[in-house]
Image 1 (spheres, rainbow, N blue to C red):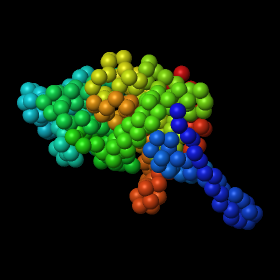
Image 2 (cartoon, rainbow, N blue to C red; image 1 turned 90 degrees about the vertical axis):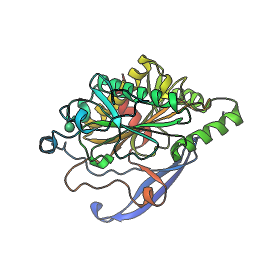
Image 3 (cartoon, rainbow, N blue to C red; image 1 turned 60 degrees about the vertical axis):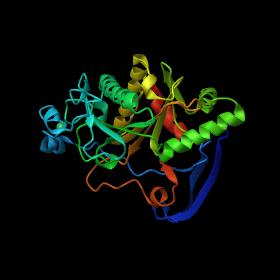
Image 4 (cartoon, helix red, strand yellow; image 1 turned 135 degrees about the horizontal axis):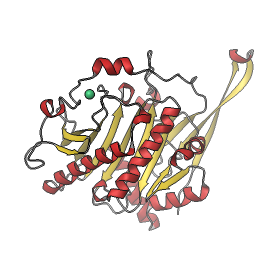
Length: 338
Ligand SMILES: [Zn+2]
């Protein structure tokens, strides 16, 4: 095994006006991802905590949107017959349909529930089980007539800071015959690791992280939940599903385990007054060296005078930042997975 946890300690000295112009030292840590070798910058200071934002006015003003139950079947696009004869794919409270403004070969929206707005703590496992089941059915049916579409993401952009203009909770399901950058990096690095070591990186990582106990949160069924050594976003939590590279082969219990982990993370976010988030499931078929990964990050919470969390570091230096020490996040979030 060649998994290395490399880090650099940086330090900035200055005379602080908050402490009578005494000299203080502010540490920063740069960590190198053991798989992709990408650098992450862990900022050790935090902006003061915010109160919970009251969304009731925003929710009231925007209800009756195109994803609300009275509109969703009237105002959203329908699938071609090859995918669904009745135009949509539904399960429980979740409804999937093509994205009117796709960003690739196959783009779908899955409306997660009939409720127009939910706070992060109001999402239930059932909501995600239904939403993921619809997403998986979309992918299975699409791949049945286009097996070249092997690269899929199931993602959620929640609230404006997460990149969504519509409050009503929904997922994006996007598939292509070519990978995204992130999928390409994960695949290339996983495959070279296996070539060099003869083992699966993801199994080795989970084995090591379990042994160290500092970033391994817990397992739910055969989904392993952990905090990345070198996170690429704020409060990043990852889940990896043992024995699968594509989400299309998951059994019902495995879908439920993914859903539970998402909801546990959202409860933690809500307790920290973090109201906006993104997650992506990177689903890739036909690759034996890759293991299905879900990555979830919080975004700067929505409030008036909202500050975007992508600075020149992320946008122009391709250096991703995190604002909590990974081992501290793991310690804090572990009770939510008990
Ligand atoms: Zn709505």
